[in-house]
Image (tube, rainbow, N blue to C red; front, side, top):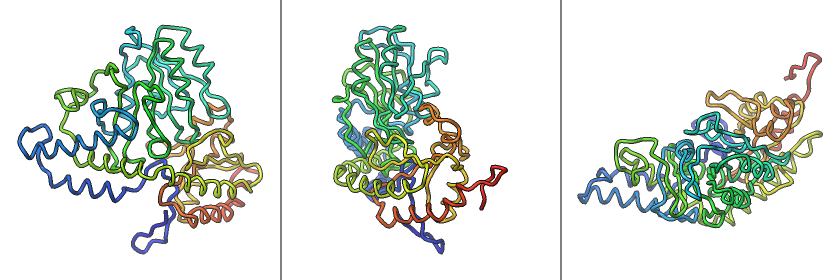
Length: 393
């Protein structure tokens, strides 16, 4: 995606996993919703019209993940959906669940443990490939009472698609529940909460071209629901108090419909572009494309070279008009070593080197070729060190 603003140079955006541009369908749906001023909890005509938008969007979100509309609770985003899901409750065999197992490559909102006591949270290791260790999961499940297990469907850094269905079998056999963070996967691969045997599923709007600040937690049919994080009203079937964000929800519904329309064809095109990008990046001696040997999201490349400093590289790409990201960025915007690569067994040289290129539905061959050309221009200086260990510019 190339764009220009005012008199700035044309820029190329390759950070779609961080957020996607607002789709025109979402923008139109939100604009229409702004004119409906009724409260969706009111019973008069104005309220019913607003309620209609909310419920139409609920159907669209449910359809996108193979769920049922009455099992969708809208939230302020993926982080809130994850936190709501990570709540002690009852398991498959109606036993109390107060233990949590999270994979070591999860989003920070999952690693924080939600409403579980920190001493009840265990970390599940991953293989060098970036896939969760199912034997390790089996061992952890055997060590105690039923647990809630949280495993993301696809990693936001490497794009590695996790063996969720296999994990679900192990978890349910042990009487536990499985939560899946599908924030990065929605709109890119097929998702079915029923086929994968997922109990709770988190998704977010802004990764698929919807508005920022909107997400949802989707439950399996007949799943016992956790107590609300925000209380004081009966909205969202008692799952989240407060007047619904009607424009945001409408935009979410429109975005997910647009993302699912032609998804297979569009993502095949994006994967071809990603392969073109990786062919160019591989020309650098010593370079690594992480998780390349396993199934990944079709749009995601995590790339590293041992002597590269990701923070410097991100800045230099930005100055050249190309937006990319490091493997991991904290809320303050400072680049941190990738906890995902650390979990995969890589040392500091690689965890500090990772650059993520993520493509989207508007990415073109010209965008990819510009990224390759920019890397070739910058790589000599970025990878060359003097005896002090400082990069030479």
